[in-house]
Amino acid sequence: MSLSNGITRLVVAVISIPLILTACYFGKIYFLIFALGIALLSFYEFSRFAKNKGMNLNVWIGYAAIILLVSNRYFLFFDNFNFLIFFVAVISLIELFRNNGSAIYNLGGTLFGVMYLGLFASSLVGIREFYPDLYYRGGYIIISVFISIWVCDSAAYYGGSTLGRHKLFPRVSPKKSWEGTIFGFVFSIISMIAAKFLILDFFSWNSVIIMGIIIGVIGQLGDLIESLLKRDAVVKDSSNIIPGHGGIFDRFDSLLYTAPVIFLYLMYLNR
Image 1 (cartoon, one colour):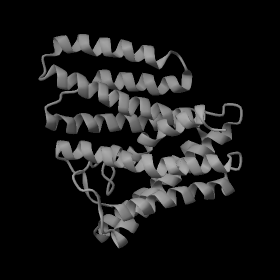
Image 2: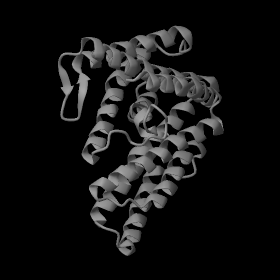
Image 3: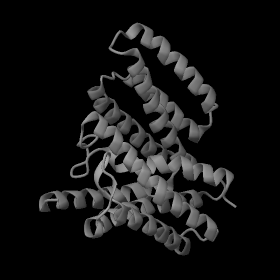
């Protein structure tokens, strides 16, 4: 990393991180807009590099579906399962008249993008809204998850750069190592333990440790899966929308992949 690129990354982080944490803390419409921004911009980036594989996603229908899915987690207008059945029927019918390349590729790419980015981003809203009567708790949970993912990414990067000897998944991400992955896993748990002392006092020790494990494992798998998609499309970054950081999908891939697992854990297993 060059000095100028490092400075750019730092400046972007200094500006963006307080804004993100503010949206997490206050929640409500502010966090909904934030989650929608992640989902819509990531879907846009995905649709752009999917063209390298001959896919012409139905972008505008995809945008509409993502807005409805993410917003519905906040407003609870309809059942998501029924909506997805309707969505598959609609995009199939529209594809009948599009005549824009491979129908199978277009339908598969559009459906995957909406499911991956729309449903996963809606889980972020579900986490933030999980305690409607004790509203600050949802903010503390989502802030803790964000920070743990950032700590995990940083620990994996610096641990791998310093001690990395054994390649983790060279076919997908040649620079990642087992050593870096272990560093990220350990520090994700440590960061959640720290959160227990600072803001998650209402969580049990079992819960914070399990959430740290989820972030340390699932978050890093999310990063690998996005790398797989980009490598298949022969692109380095999902976009260059964030100076020095690549694209929105690049920055929030771990968060998006982790969110539904944490949301399901809170719903069914958190005791």
